[in-house]
Image 1 (cartoon, helix red, strand yellow):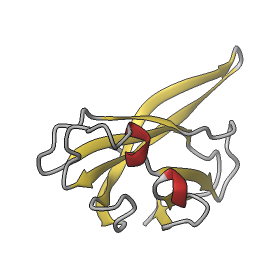
Image 2: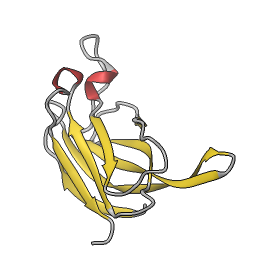
Image 3: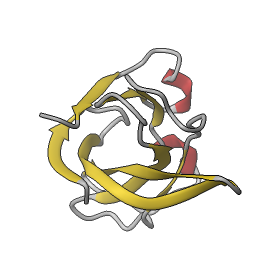
Image 4: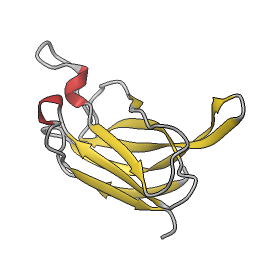
Length: 133
């Protein structure tokens, strides 16, 4: 982990709270033959854990939309990828989103969060991470 924190971002998925746990180091991403840059992922948990899916629910019902930006120049355009642990219920289900570039200047990262696909037009809020603080 680059930075650890525990920020309860609310119930972005009905019945599950989105808890931001920190930023992890994704190593260096090769952008082209002459350029490489460090990357990060946002680590989170859905609390309580997501139960095994039934016929009425889909995996996409449990994905939170995240738009990433920073106050400095980004070495490449951020995309939104990631992974989520198997749905086994329990106390929490771990997820990770990224790989996003670290800014070449500046120090404030912003993660605009939105809930289920049918609610993504209305952001649920913004997680702001000050790397210097």
